Length: 325
Ligand code: PMT
Image (cartoon, rainbow, N blue to C red; front, side, top):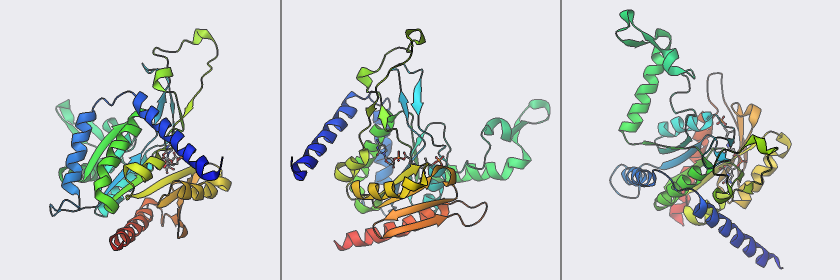
């Protein structure tokens, strides 16, 4: 088979895998509600609808997807991600004037809550004398006020839309919905794909319905490969959007090689390469113009601060160049 025929065959097989993934996935429970919220959010913020507000819109994905092992799920495989990167990046995008669709794993880190303790309800609140009311502990007062103020303002202004997911099925169905809705934004739309997405899954129709029994002996299970949705993003869902994917590795020797490969293969505008243990200190941004190492500048600062500045800058150039073509 010549190489053109080979790549066409590969493309067709990917399409079949993707079709089959979506056709067999359990339907989203709140499909209509999510779709309505998305439509309204994009309509309200879109710079292309001429309602005078006009913001760029970014979809930030955050947290890890799960792979259920049973339809009535008791056990699942998880992908590591605290959601810190996505939450911090959302704050900096909002600060830069973007409207943000925060597609996040339920229960992971939320924007403006990064400085609050894990068990914040019990840690931050205390009973007042006589137990007649509740107050915020003095030591957390500024952090709690800041979190409430920023979060409520962003929601009230209609510039932050939070969409939760848990499983790989939910994540990819919502991502597709967001991407096809944002297609109308052309180059003003951005995808910042920081979620840790499962590479393997159990197709719904082959999955056990009930809890797998341990009495049956060792578990032998074949996982199918999750089709790479970055290809669909580029080819069909939102081809003109500014698209940033992430590359996470634990072995630094292969990190940049893999990031370069992702940039070319999936035609990303940028790939953010990070190593697990140093991900909060530095990342390397790989683009066609070269590589840039981004480090957090001082203690107490976030690497996402200079990272989002760089991305916003490149996005502006991309919009200008798209207008010329
Ligand atoms: O949340 P934190 O604790 O702060 O950590 C942040 C992070 C390390 C999770 C984040 O910075 C990060 O690197 N996220 C991407 C992790 C990941 O899934 O990498 P990957 O090499 O498996 O995938 C690379 C890209 O392909 C990702 O952008 C993913 O969205 C995409 N992908 C993956 C699988 C798949 N089937 N389809 C995809 O499109």
